[in-house]
Image 1 (cartoon, rainbow, N blue to C red):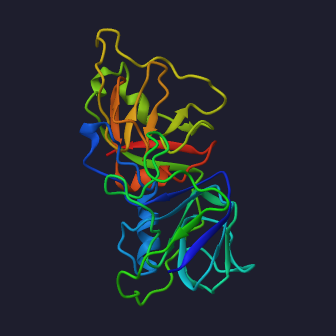
Image 2 (cartoon, one colour):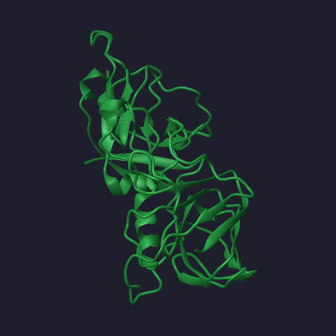
Image 3 (cartoon, rainbow, N blue to C red):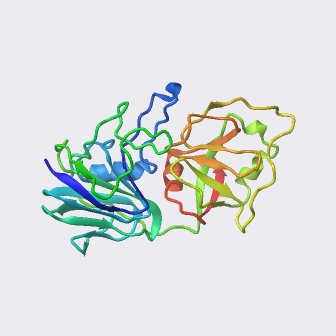
Length: 290
């Protein structure tokens, strides 16, 4: 059985699949890949089922060595992907020879890369998923240098296509689709969400992307109706946009809590949520009504 030895992880590298849905009533969030589309694509390139566990790499820095031959693909953020010092590119299936080293550099666009290996990362499942949940502490711990990951057996035939188109261009402003949330009426000015731009904060992570108005403004105007009353804690869906009293929205990502006490004013489309998962601090975002 092939094994992958982790040599370096960068800021954060975790094992992720498509999460553990169906346990929110127990207080367990779904977790899983922040950019699900990127993980699905990487798995398809190496002949895995779409939900197979791979490695999510935040802001590059992953280096690993394989003790046997392995087929791999890296998708998501665009940056230098090297095998034994040779560039192999993003969105391309490539072979790691026995003893070969793969590295993922700092992205030039996006922030999360996804490494899929044919057969998948074989770690123990927790509640049906191999995902690392950094908020709840479920699943395998974040990867560290010295870890050795087992690789499972092949799952399906390899696809005829070994490469996928990669768009390294990023618009200055990311426009995402926002559908009305269940507590939109709790906002004093619901239209303010879709008016103007928002900037991604440095305190964003796998739990949520925190926004503020650009230009160094610490807070937006308070945006809760004073007559709306106190809102009891209630369930939060993946991609929910919650607005605390400060008026600065939070977009909940993969490791979000299952309940919250602030109004959920909107919910992002699945495609928009994948795009948001690739935004770095300082990125500009605009909501458009779905």
